[in-house]
Length: 215
View 1: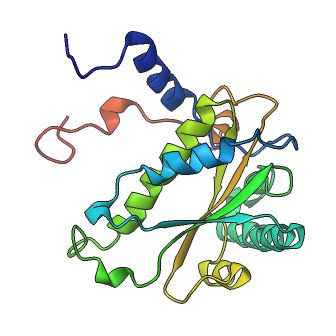
View 2: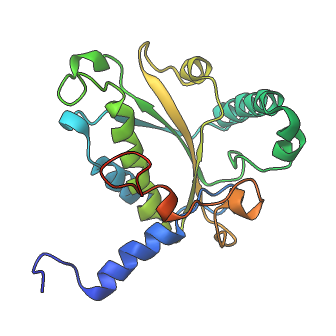
View 3: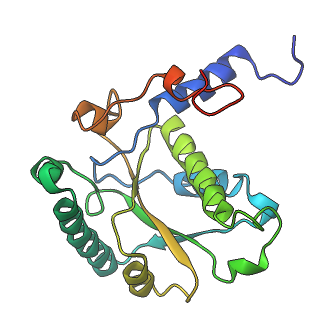
């Protein structure tokens, strides 16, 4: 027996949260319980980061007019995305791609400015700051799902425009508009799979041995 392993129930809970995590777009307007958002943020802040740089920053949007401005910009980008999709434009426009106006909380997640000073782990792969922040967001997502709260990562925005809207410093990089809140029900599968946009690939299609494309 592995002395470092969690109990069977705890292990099952971790894997359940991973399996049932969803990128949520449909929310109820009910507020979060006291302390919930703080717990999710603390989970995010415990994420792994290259060189321990902790590049993530979270901006909680509590001003209604600011939330509406972010929503308007995301909708503008949604239309531009549809135009770029060509023959799938109409299909795309039928999808709900965000819940900014309905969710309990909106957070803008960004990377810090002056990131070039962090070289540890980034000398040849500077994008590892983004990978680190993505890990933090995954922690947030899983913690929220474990408590029955939905979260949706919206990436349909122009970084410069969103940076200006919320006053981020030059050199910083917004990476997500995060919608958080109660849901009527969690999707039984990823929404884009349910909507027939795409489907999850079999594990054998993405797992190789020794060389790329060697099953």
